[in-house]
Structures are given as C-alpha cells and as structure tokens.
Length: 250
Image 1 (cartoon, rainbow, N blue to C red):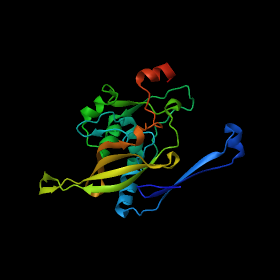
Image 2: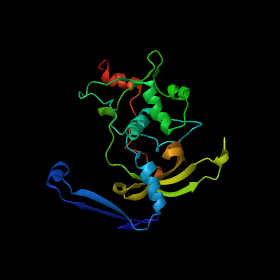
Image 3: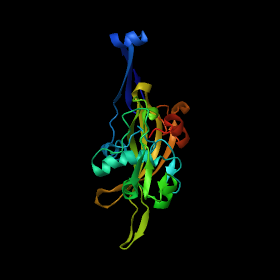
Image 4: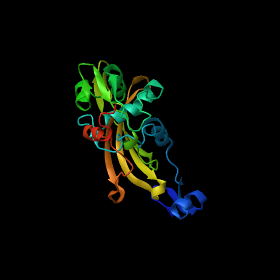
C-alpha cells in the first residue's frame, strides 16, 4: 500500500484464476487506486463535462502539444470520432469493414465533417483541409475508420482535473469588452495498473461559449513520469502503411 502526493492510496496484489494461470502460469495482478484527499467539486464537474468524454483512448487530443495557432500532430479523424456522437447523439456511422482484411474508405460530405470539428475547435476550413485528405472535386473528406491494425490496449490511465484557472482576459464585442471565456485545466493521468496517480499531466484550455457551447483551445503536455511513453496509444495508419496492409482491398 502506498499513499501518494496526489492524495491516493494505491493497493497492489494478485488473485488466482484457473483460466489465467493456464495461460501465464502465475497469479493475476490487480491494482486499485482510491482517492483519500477530497477533490474540489468544481474540478470534478469540469472533468465530467469537458475531459472524460474525450479521455485518452483512440485519440491524441490530450496526448500531444497543440494550439489554435499550431495544431501540430493533432489527429482530426480521431477528433471527428470523438465529437460526432457528442454533437449528433448517435454513433459514428462510418465503421470498419467486418472483414479484417478489407480497409473501409468513406467520403464524408464537407458540411458534416467541418461542422463536427468546427463546433468544438476554432479552425478555419483551409487549415482543416490541409491537415486531412480533402477531395475538392467531391466536396468531401476521405475517411478511413480505425481497423484491427490500429487497435489500442484497453488498459489505460484516466484523466482527473486537479486545478483550474479562469482567465481574466477580455475580448472586444459589439457590446464592448467581455471576458474571453477561457479556463485553463490542470489534469493528471491516474493509472492504477501502473501503480501511480500521476503517470503524466497536461494543461488543457477550453473556451466557454453561449448556450452551453464550448471549444477546446489548446493542450500542453507538462510532465511524463520517468519519461514514460504513452505506450498504449496507436496512431492511425499512414497512407503508405494502409496500402501495405490492405493493398487494393477497399
């Protein structure tokens, strides 16, 4: 048992399973992280509303440095997969083929793709089209859903907002100066199976809009414990890798 600076009790143990023992010839390890130090309720609410719906699975929104001035290596296709269900209240309809040897390819109308991304990020169409595969003759975005070869490990950390700063900056409007609506969130990645309550941390800025709207403004990786890689994350296949895996099967 270990008590951490972040206010967690970490427990590590093992249990016996006939099935797992037959595969590994050892007991099955088990880890638990219990928060003991109370966390501010506003932090919890900010986490529930803006961070947990994105998380760290099958996207790099909170795993890489980016901003509205430089979107860096942000993957907009993964962002589309995250934001589409939030915006339309239904699953993404562009799914992988049931045959693992076939790579599905879709043409998403620009109105749909751009609406999804631009609802949650302040990016102009030209930049978005440069960062993706845009087919001008079809007014559509080429989209390849993640397949078997882009799967990730299910054992990943979870985010926890531990502090926040409401900006006092202002912007000009028709009604005069008004707050710019941004909030900086300090987030720790809690990883029970790694026996740590601080696998890494990042600083994410969000912008609150009218009618309960909001946008993600930037993300900055602050620290990685022991320079630990974000090992569970898999990038989408590049075009060359995709062709090598699937050939002409689409």
